[in-house]
Length: 148
Image 1: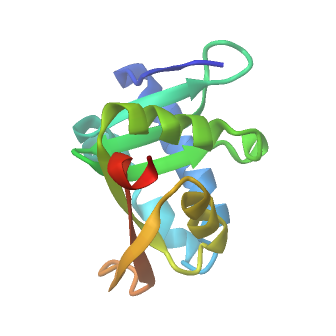
Image 2: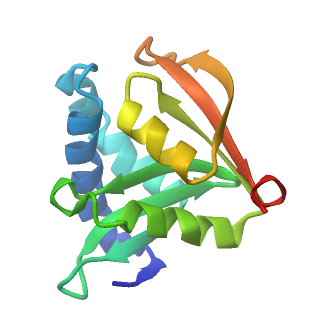
């Protein structure tokens, strides 16, 4: 498997990966919310971000992706059936080679993701509330200096 920059032709599949992953990881938020964000994800968020895909076993199709907005990890999603194989970790490590520090926001109820980021060297630096969903989030940060 390898990581490459996303292309415009990847966007429809990335939106599918994002939606499936969001529905599973964020089951505490109504599915209608995620479905309502598909168009914005495809037309605004993904095109505006610096996005990398990890290619699946077929050598072509994205099995997951990571989007950066400056030093913020704006999105990190892996196909549900490909999770647990280290793909998210590889995408995050790739981002760590591109930036000296990273930050992100993660829903506090998404305990799997919170623990994943902690294992990768992120620490909780603040709490906030997502204005769109009303859900509590952690602000987490990683820096090259702190990790090594």
